[in-house]
Length: 464
Ligand SMILES: Cc1cc2nc3c(=O)[nH]c(=O)nc-3n(C[C@H](O)[C@H](O)[C@H](O)COP(=O)(O)OP(=O)(O)OC[C@H]3O[C@@H](n4cnc5c(N)ncnc54)[C@H](O)[C@@H]3O)c2cc1C
Image 1 (cartoon, rainbow, N blue to C red):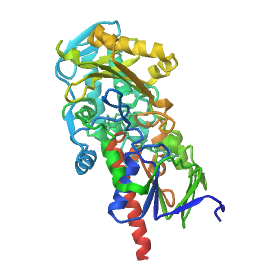
Image 2 (tube, rainbow, N blue to C red; image 1 turned 90 degrees about the vertical axis):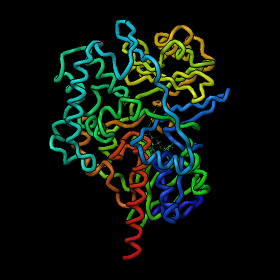
Image 3 (cartoon, protein in one colour; image 1 turned 180 degrees about the vertical axis):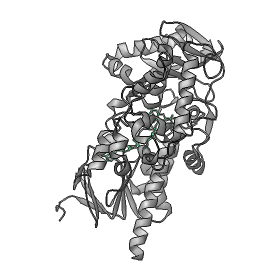
Image 4 (tube, rainbow, N blue to C red; image 1 turned 90 degrees about the horizontal axis):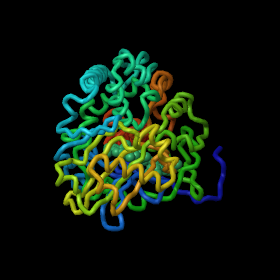
């Protein structure tokens, strides 16, 4: 018997836990199917790892997910339904590569034609692509060399592939930029799975027609806010799930003040957030082991705002990759579409976040602005506004962009632990997606998949 309580009771057919894009997509599909649901979200806003802020001078900044590409059809369809427009990411002008010896190389195109280690880097990334083409993204454990690859890290693979230290520097920054982790931490199989889920390495890395193609005029939280507006009172903010009791009869999700009772739950949280909830009965070993092999990446996103995108007049795009000792690994021009302000965004990844986040506020800011001045010149040292979001310190996400899988995680636990429902509890979240895993698009498709699972089990019970 479930424990009796004095708390408020809310009953519905389905309770969705988490109001990021995965939970919102699940709730929207239930709403469209006429299924009674309640969505509980711990924070005082929806969007989760997508966090749009309008700064004091009116500039819209995305601290979390922001870009959308043309093959991310779930996100584009959702944006289209709610009339959220996009505009192309700025990449006109010369990009800059800052090398580890401090040398700065401006270039056009995807990479400098003859930069150090480029040829070897290109060759190894083509090998990654070729291996990724053999991955079964729906049932990854059916991939022929599944266990062999999952026993390796990206680091051991790179070492076996090339002795060229410059190529390895490039490969390391690619891993940091895609998974916010270091090559020594991540399963090679997970790297290949993720490349396959995106439709190839170029899709992940490039801008035009690829993952970084466009941005949202209202910020990337625009569609999420619109969904929440439509769902109205079905969305309960400030309700952090603390425990979930489940059996074949249904589920009870408890927050500090309320019990949400339903026939099914969809838990749409990042893996480390799932681990903060007390499940009764405890989760199966497969699911628990999967979660323990799925740490969050380490990333901070920093913005500096200027009165104009001054680098454009100097023929620079504002796009840069940095291999030097500074905190920032990658820079983009994140100015608004009308260029009414100039905005640079920088990403701090992996081990660099760990060290940089220990500095005090002034030192962190100075280190980032030094990276920016290396890329676009001294004017970058004096922004009108500066802001940073260290995702490892986010109460609910505990990191970003997403969870990656450590060696052995897929082999030991993937088949039953990745996304197979646990009785009346169904799993969503971008980490459970087969297409664009780790992205907003993957979050949405995971929510739709989980809602479909629930609708079909509820209707088969009704027929039975
Ligand atoms: C810095 C950064 C940059 C990124 N860039 C991009 C990009 O450009 N393009 C892209 O497509 N993707 C990007 N991503 C990834 C993208 O943001 C995520 O894949 C996506 O938002 C995940 O959605 P989700 O619904 O699966 O999870 P989340 O967004 O994490 O949603 C989970 C929700 O659950 C809530 N929650 C947590 N615990 C509880 C609890 N106990 N009870 C109730 N609610 C709870 C959280 O508050 C959150 O709202 C980026 C992410 C980061 C952090």
